[in-house]
Length: 290
Image (cartoon, rainbow, N blue to C red):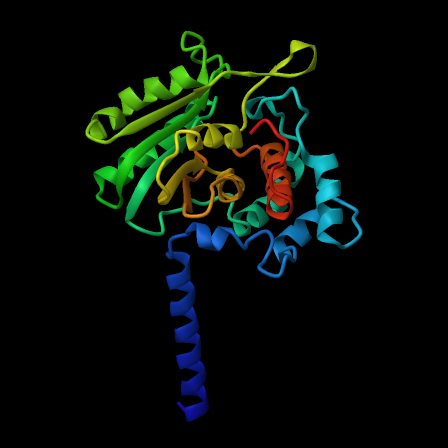
């Protein structure tokens, strides 16, 4: 074999090794933060492909993209996330790899081992709540993280009818804390449980507090600034990370993690989450239910 052939073989072997290594590299929030909008405030290639495939006409500006996706992708205000019907099922084969490239499909791992706070974000869907609490317990059991304080951020939103006897998100979170063993695991840690009531809108219509609302309620207790590990689940990790980054004041650092989906993927849920994430990344303080 000639020198030129040897060089090509060496290059191919090197490339294959690089690809294999990258496939097994753990995804962290640092990768996710620039997967939709890059550091130059430009939409990623995957986002551009998704917009084209779903016929989102815009003026080629980030503001224009956000304006159109807010109109086309946000769920109705009276709809909970778990109530969305999948309107993307005919295009999932094309769209799912793009969601994956945007950091919405795979498990997101911790970036560090030592944290001052573990914040578990409350949620009304039992499977999602279980994933968040279970992942925290798993990482503690495996010795992959150490935390000094546990914070549960929840509200009195009604839960999925699978557990009608629990009635509220807060009760669901307390139930799962006990059942997963996380409550026993962290009994020596200072624990804060935020339980916000529903908010009143016009004509006394009730809406659930947002993630931002629960974080601000926690901040009213004047916690000492420190390193925060945020527990969410996919496809919400990127969006909720952006909310926490915007809400927590200087001195707090944010590292958001979450397990991959365990059930069939609802395309409409991904689009709704992506629309909120885009707005949050560009403008912050989105007016939303979550």
